[in-house]
Image 1: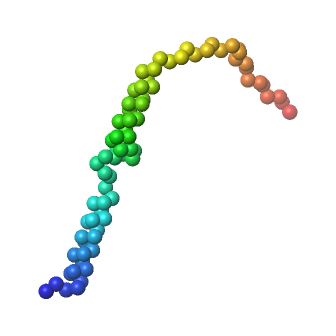
Image 2: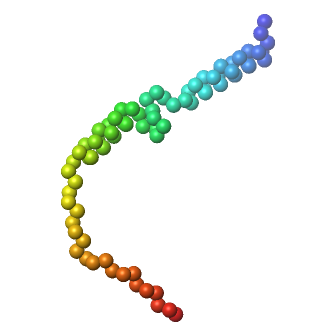
Image 3: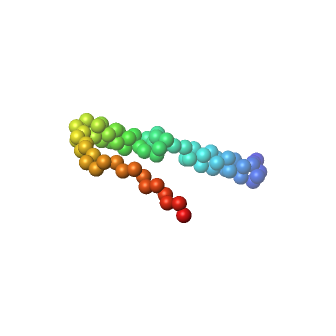
Length: 73
């Protein structure tokens, strides 16, 4: 016959195994916490943005100015 101590030990070990197995990452998550479906959607959006033609950048109309020199006090 099992003693109460053995019964408690068995229950405690089973509970620890259950808790540890619940702590692992899910199969659908990546290290960043994004699910596979979200990662696919983000990749598709990035490809769409990369495929768009880039607008021409305007030329600078104001010449660069030198930094002011500090006054001696």
